Every structure is written in C-alpha cells, then in structure tokens.
Length: 178
Image (tube, rainbow, N blue to C red; front, side, top):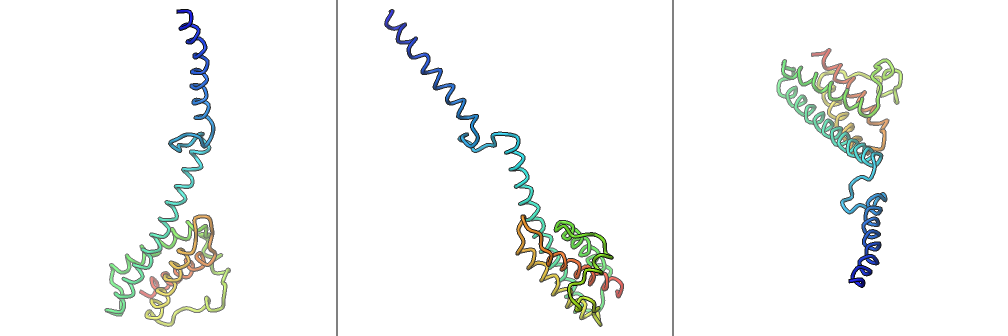
C-alpha cells in the first residue's frame, strides 16, 4: 500500500504539469488547434480584413452594374434615338452607383474640384450629340470597370476616381439633354 501511495504521489506532479502545459499552450498566440483568434486584437484584425474583402467585392459588383446599365441605356437609345421615362430612372440609378463607387474609392464629392482637376484637355470637350455621349459613356464605363479590376483592397486608384468623374459628367449631360 505504501508503494502504491508513493507511486501516486510521484505521478501526481507529472499529471498536473501536463495539464498546466496544455493550458499554457492554449494561451500562446498561434498555438490553438482550431486557429481561432487568441485575443481581441487578432479578432478585430480578422474582422477588418474580412470587411475589406467584402467591400472590395461589393465595389466590383457595382462596377459590373454600371457597365450593365450603360449597355442597356445605349441599346435603348440606339433603338429609338430617345430616352423613355424608364431610361431616365436608369440614368438616375447609374449616377447613384457611380457616386457610391467614387466614395468607396475615396474620391471627393465636391463637383467644383472635379472641374478644376482636369487631367487632359480632352476632358474639357462635351459630346456634340446624344449618340456620341452614349458612345463616350460606354467607353468610360468600360474603362472604369477595367480600373476597378486592377485595384486591390489595399490601393487607391486615381485613374478609377477620374473615370467615375468622367462617367458622372456624361450622365449629367445626358440628363440635361433628355
């Protein structure tokens, strides 16, 4: 009996050490088997990363919507050489989408600044006809989408912001000429 008690007393510290070692391992960052965040900072960093990914995906979806709306408007105008009330609503929707894209990219909402920051003299010209305006709108929407595809969630594209400004300028032109 004394031997059994002595064996239990000798084994008890090793069992306790094994338990405390496994507890200590779960407290060390990066050592948890489920790869769950170890601290609030890790959890928040993971949440920010996931939000940035979702925001970038949403930005690309909006860009695709802009291209689709532009295609619909161009086709509608080519069919009847005028815009219907439904097309006017699509123009409004297009303008709102492009504003959201510009805001997501970090672009300024100050339209006077847009006019002052022209990158080339070609930006100063207005389309001479509705047909030319729709053609330019299609080109600029495609350019915007190409630029959005080039961006990452870590970058800011000045060219994409300038493209949004050009698209907005054409949408406003079309709304006035309607």
